[in-house]
Length: 447
Ligand SMILES: OCc1cccc(Br)n1
Image 1 (cartoon, rainbow, N blue to C red):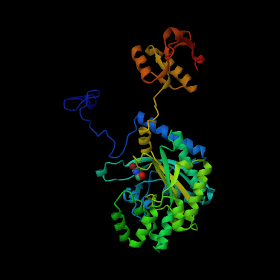
Image 2 (cartoon, helix red, strand yellow):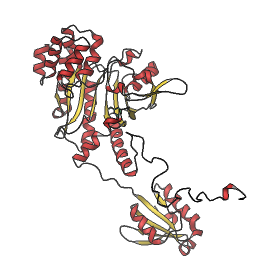
Image 3 (cartoon, rainbow, N blue to C red):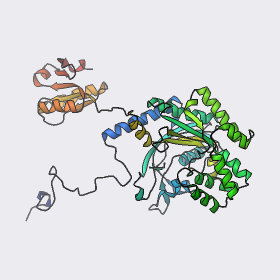
Image 4 (tube, helix red, strand yellow):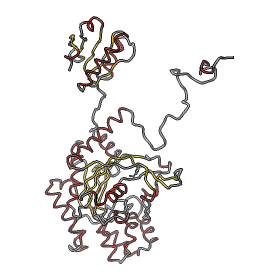
């Protein structure tokens, strides 16, 4: 019998294909879990480019980056307003018997951190985050179960100047990506419009969130379904008529006529449009009373970015949520913010031919002409790296033909050959791969 198991070739007959042999079916499923994505280099370059633009806009607006665990207590997201986002919560019980969830959004975590920081942070806070968010959607719809969201939030500013600044930060991002006011725009409204209508039909405040979530589906499901749902939570048919009427308004004067100039709804919106005019982005936004957004916690201005062609789902959305922190037991701190997903924007840029051409490039490829020169080649690579150059060090004994091909594949600018005769004179052979120029240089002359 064999002296030791180690000497037994793992590829004794029947053990399946060995490395390099063409595998017909992999042993494990090499695809990511349903509804999730891998980011191989090409896709990762595009994602990094997008996130770099998010971060650059946040820097221009003096926002500070924050982050939170992707796993949160389930309690953070339990809301009784029938929101899709909480109904599709990716939650489970951990080994400690705790109810936990993969976050479906970032705002509750941000609220939690602000409360945790309490008096140790001074308001206003301008925080941003880019985080992966999750939902457990029935596979029937074959939709994604994760996406990355850029969030920008202003905490502690009660006036609509905060919303005006947030919307302008998104306009700034759109411009950086090459989009104009003819490509995209923002529908803007205020939940105080709905609040005013519910008050005049004396509908209890505690139904406000639920009504908003139902109304948010106005353009997605038949009106009869909306009416049925509203009736089922006790809203009178008369009130429903009033709601439907106010949601079809398309101008502020119309709204003023209906609600009167007194209410904050009209005052907030007027002020916001004045500020937009002063920022110079009036042509990017318009009042649309049908914008409600599907999150229960918004209390004031709400907005959503959309593609004017009307082919895609909302690009981003946000609004004021003045009560969220107090519902978590924190102080009554005003807040507003938005979420901007990583999927619709890429679809839009694709449609507009605005996707950037991003290639993997390196500055230098270093190749020892024979194995004894591996050490010197590594030193040359290290010298170049210390000067900030990206260096591909060839790690195996390859033929020169392969090295040239590889240099082309990785878009190297220079090929540095470490050869015996040159090395004896402390030199290396440098080939500029675009000009074809060739020269011997001392190692420390390289830059
Ligand atoms: O915006 C709704 C949402 C939340 C989590 C994950 C995905 Br994909 N979509």
